[in-house]
Length: 473
Image 1 (tube, one colour):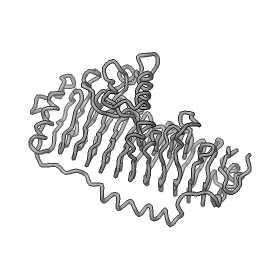
Image 2 (image 1 turned 45 degrees about the vertical axis):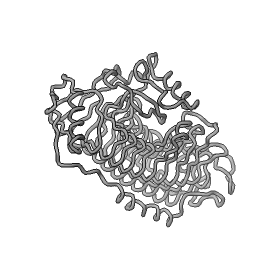
Image 3 (image 1 turned 180 degrees about the horizontal axis):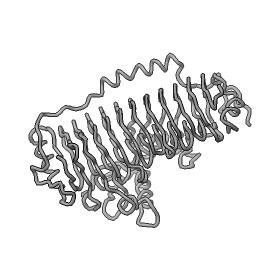
Image 4 (image 1 turned 90 degrees about the horizontal axis):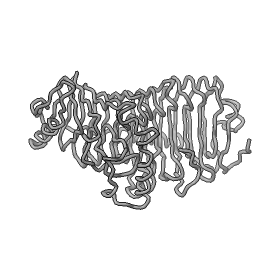
């Protein structure tokens, strides 16, 4: 094991959950020269920001006018296509000055739904919006974002662009109807598949091709999101169940003042079926939601590579309160699209557990992404079991170790985390010459940890009153 000295990056592969930590000298203090995370009083000051952020996050309110889609020809038999009825009801609502577009009990087949200013799309109990499996129903193309890069592509299934006061509420179900032969198959080989289109889009962004000329859609295979609200202000998604998206389920982009409350995302089978991915958003509250996903449960993002640098918009002031995470690649995740920067993320009172939940807290980026990831605060997190590491900070995502844009990652504070069992407590991988700068874990218990922990290229790791396998480290 490489000797640890003051002011040097840690490059340690822990040989055992407890013994390795002790051998590494992680005994309750950081290296003196390391920048480290905030001191305890500074952490308390950081948490004092939460009430201020919450006061700014206010759900939109709507006039008491109701526009049932059945009044515009919608039939809830699950086979009659109701795209025009949704469009007409939304147009009538907007023309009247706003209100509620009502989806009564029944199953309504439709193509893309585009929201307007001051419109609340409300699903009664027993109502299901079932989206068509025909890609033509999501044309013409719209201004959207695919994995952190802007383009013109198939419309997200529920979409709003540059709108104020929009909501999706109720006790109903929003069903993307994706499966192994519809949409999800685009992620697989052999062709037709999204791989060549992803490479083409990335190349266009690197070359600075204007977004209006990055036209995909028909003849291409970049999957749309289920719900995407783009550059909107005053957003509410509450009560609904969403499932089986082509890829990411709920994706606010460049939005301000976002509330996502008591939503269930039940989409564990699909590739890239993230639960909720606020990207380049400011003032976001995700509370009392339940996630069962085929990828990250909550993933906070900020654009990717050249396009992320062009847009240069961070995600900041994101609150994750009292959520349940089951299946997924990560419970609360930051990245991998970090180029615009992510900061002031707070998560607390969350419960995470599944044999298919790979990690509880996950930060992922690489030297092509750049950006900053800092001021992350977690407390009172309960983890029943995880399939890999409880806490992972990996700056080599997609096995990329070198590049021109090293991310600045650090100031991560975790306290009162309790994990029952997992292969490892920590997987912390910095870059040589660009370490993770500061991780503090306080008053936390890691129960049955069975495999080798990894800590490499980290400065300022502090463990205070941390117990692993029944021993204090």
